[in-house]
Length: 579
Image 1: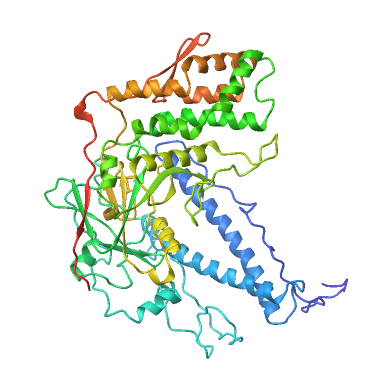
Image 2: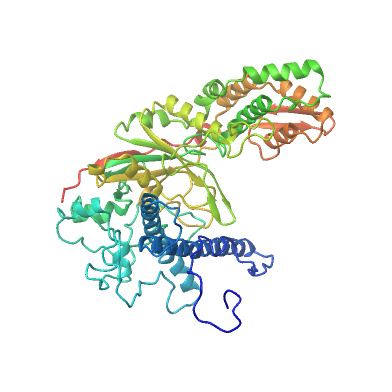
């Protein structure tokens, strides 16, 4: 019914409109997750539920997107809509929608046709779920519309399959394909799964003796231009990520892991894992934790004039403020960095002047199934400020976690003599490290004419597998496993203890701790100190009784010189024949 008419009608008296968000974005109101029973698989079930929730939210976004596109289409056809939009605004938004939707199609197809297919097989589905092909029966009525389309110029449906459409390269890549030669040789199993070459040293965790788990990217034969002969391509070529041909490295036979080979005419990118690989210990032996906690005190004091409780004695309040004002983060890290860097790392950097360096850390987090990144995939840099302004001052506040990590890595690179570090990038703790992110940053930095230059990317990491027993990276050839560096020598421990005393004396810390606790036992500084000195801390320890505590620095030390980490491997050029 319309306009109060009393009879049934099939024609609306008002023009049809397409609201931008006819469907709210979020989890449906009638969604109830399956109850999880506690047990050995409870954590896995919760992980699946987070994935389900994330997919439901994305589905609601797709519905809202379709309605928004309907509005734009009506405007383009001159059939009404949001008249306040100018033609140039419409054109700009349409271009953004096309680019974003095409990228989403690629990413979603990759997910559903790899991990989604594995889940379907585990559920016993005869026809594993995948992204469906386009199925439009009628030709488009608007044949002169611009932008990517699945139809030919005459309006008929193109005969390409979905997989062919998703594998179509960008205009720049298509121009390069004119100079390509015959089709790539097939290097696959009879099952069609990409076959990784055998390794002379183990790449999988000893605790994970099952068959090699699927890699992050689907096991497809690499596509694109071939640069080396068939032997080298089959041996080193991993895939093409974001238009960059990516190669790996393999241990030199009989070198016992002391040397690796990679295609000599490719650009070498070495990616450090920061904890227990580039620097000592998980969390850099908690040195970073102590120093960034002091940085947090300094930041809070600059934003909140009442950060120090009023009941703290005036002499201690004055001493605390003077200490924070004089604290220099970079100076503190520089005074201890020679004790944190892995032995032999300086010589390792010097032996590879041709390499471009990266640092991979684990500071991202997962919220409701969505990965929240503390770094931009555009520039690969860790942010300096928190997302929200300070609740007291209303100004931007330095994020101690991010900024301390940033300065620590800069000091480590200065000490190691790394002058050509590309960018530090971030990973999610316990999850595999997608080196396609490195390839994307490489592609973004290169000139368009240089996009297809081959790159060898290798992660140097103390872990072979992620928390789920799968390879840390997309392909085993992209991983160089080294023993963990998690303890300093006895001589270094004494030097580190003296250096930390110069940064934050334990007597000074105890004086601040007791004064703040007496004034306000629930003060955030008390919680901060308790965390950085708890039982899991590998540096600062709180001992004594609850009423009479005391602190001491107790670095983790190696039992003997024989436990020192071995030298890092050397990456040698393999002079592969050009194609």
